[in-house]
Length: 139
Image 1 (tube, one colour):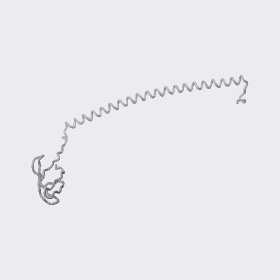
Image 2 (spheres, rainbow, N blue to C red; image 1 turned 180 degrees about the horizontal axis):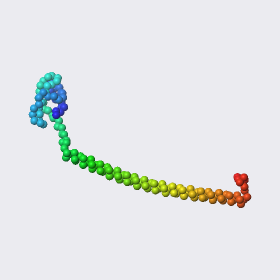
Image 3 (spheres, rainbow, N blue to C red; image 1 turned 120 degrees about the vertical axis):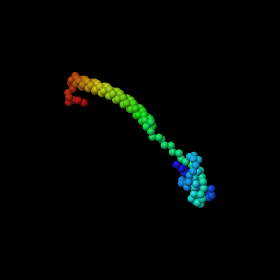
Image 4 (cartoon, helix red, strand yellow; image 1 turned 30 degrees about the horizontal axis):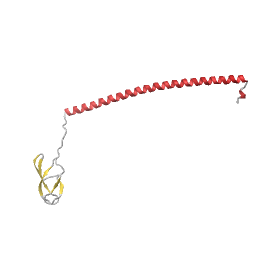
C-alpha cells in the first residue's frame, strides 16, 4: 500500500501528495514511481514509501489463546465476586445480631422504666393517703 508522502517536483518545486503514480517498479522497500506534476505537468521519478500493514493471522491457535485469557479473567472475576458476597453476607449477619441485641437492650430499658414509674405512682398514692389528701386537692 502506498503512503501519502509529499512528492516535490524537480522542475517547478511544488509539492503534492504522491497517491497515484503513473508507473511503479523495483523491489519491496526500494520502489520507485513515475509521477506527473499537477502544477506544471512534468513527468519525473521519485522514491515511494510503502505502508506495511501487519495483519494478525486468524488461526485456531490464536483463538484458543485468547479464549484462555478471557476464561482466566472470567474465573478471577467470579472468585472476587464470591469473596465480596461472602464478606457482605457475614457483615449482614453480624449487623442483624447487633440489631437483635439492641432491641433486647431497649426492651429491657422500657421494662425498667415502666417498673420505676409504677413504683413512683404507688409511692405518690401512699404519700397522699398518709397526708390525708384527696384526689381533688392535687396541687
